[in-house]
Length: 379
Ligand code: BJ8
Image (cartoon, rainbow, N blue to C red; front, top):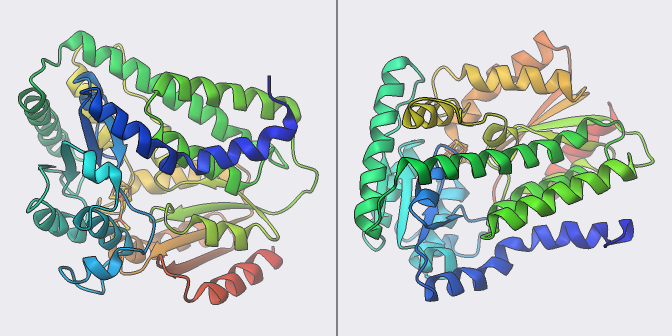
């Protein structure tokens, strides 16, 4: 049994999970298990799981291959899109390399146009996602889910039975519940870990192929942290929202947590992808999947009321003192939506708000650090 002293090691193991699982991906391939690469929280991963595939996120988090990507894509494009394309093009990401199929969705313009280029050298399946969450949109999304089912069955020569799908839904719900329990530890004041450590676990857990073992580790870690109790020092409590943080979390959170704790993450990898379960008792499991996966508050939706509702709820439940919005450079939908978030935070909740724009490079880090320090010092 590990001790409390091991906790930093455990957090680091999660942060290195993405790299560590490169080997596992290769072994999976050698054993004949198909690998499906995905890009987005809207992707109903229960379907490839029910097809017997392993699923991995392809969103890249380093600027290493951006120059290669810029040979094919405009320079003034979001770093997440350029980095992901760059790693695919240069074969430097084992997950891309081993993926038998890449599943993408029509979310933001940059991503959906990049998928056209990606399809030149990878097998890409694009799901048509509308930019609203109406009942018509739901019908279309359910159709898209059924179209994906047929695609997976044909590609991998398997039948996705209702029984297999319901088992995958139940497993994925268990995983989400374990992550929500873990993540809600941050409601403690002071929290039992820093936001940096919390994020490492949330993000790293998505790169484990042995899903049940990963879930059990999260449950055990949650129990230990609950027993350990809160950190010693009380600090202002920050909610982080905006574009996905994977490529910038280290620089943002290390600056933010000099004087505060990042106790809540509304973005993808955080609450946006976790809080809602698929209704396991639904008579029509495809309908339940469609509802759950359309009900995600991304800025590609217009209007994006689910995001605003989730922000309200989290600000109250996590007893937030200030909100920091992180926007990846040229991410237009999140940048435009900062106005709505600022209003909600400052006018409706009466709290301080800061928006920062950044990319995957190291340049400009000092300026971001100064702004975040100034923001947290005044709380
Ligand atoms: S559900 S946030 S994972 S689309 S790629 S929108 S940063 S300009 S990633 Fe996303 Fe799905 Fe939404 Fe989440 Fe902006 Fe870049 Fe587009 Fe991005």
